[in-house]
Image (cartoon, rainbow, N blue to C red; front, top):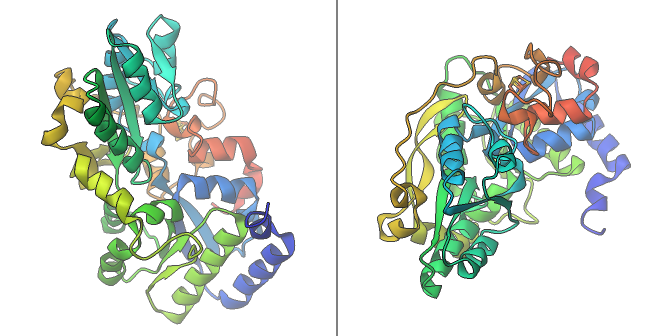
Length: 368
Ligand code: SF4
């Protein structure tokens, strides 16, 4: 447990909380970008331990939550094709589309399979030459290298019955969209450590410069998060804005060039619609024309009409830091993990799921 237990050390946590108390003098709103960070904050009771001046709000860093209804409907449409085996990571299955979820079409006989790696789906394609295998490639920059690699691998092996339905989104354009929104007021960001492991930290410099907002690249354990918050508060109290790296044990400034090369080989940056937020220019990856034979949208000529979001779900306001899950009138009542109205209630990185499973919502509510 070395390198993990030390980042969960109760005494270090207490010292960091005290350090934050000593530094903070005014109210600050800090957004943790990643859903994994949200879960760690809620699960470990960190928000209740912070001084009242600090308000943590939860960003759009849950890829399942931001996958728009239209793309889930595309996956369902493909899964209903008798010649298709649709492969996906597990937490996409319960996410509601406009009429049903992948789990519901699976229950009705569609061949939907949970895989743990896109390369597993390539092997499935090799073993089922009479079927079309589609991998539902959802995620941020973190999962794009493995998904891209599956396309390169299928191409090298001459596997022609494999394609991906890409729903990749990028973190920096989403942070800019939130900062540009006149409704939002975010004083500082904790950037997602695992995304920076792949992409490095250079692309955050222009955001710090343009919006004068401190950004601290942060890990996921309680000590990581509290160090990140402390670093952000020190900057805010001094009135400076810099990019800092709390997660230096993992994140290099230049990121992982090999992984970036794989992304650049297969994908190009494109406009993308974010569920609950809307279209953000140049905020996603789409499969390049050179690999269009592996793009499920081209292969199956997908052109479904876009559908409106469920008006009962306020996930967009939550992911922009305007609301907390407990402020949703449907939280825990009409919307729960068994009957979700929105993806944040069922995704392993969703803010609503974190509050539902781990929070003492009455305590968290006091901080809202
Ligand atoms: S509680 Fe349910 S309906 Fe409300 S924002 Fe979360 S997912 Fe949407």
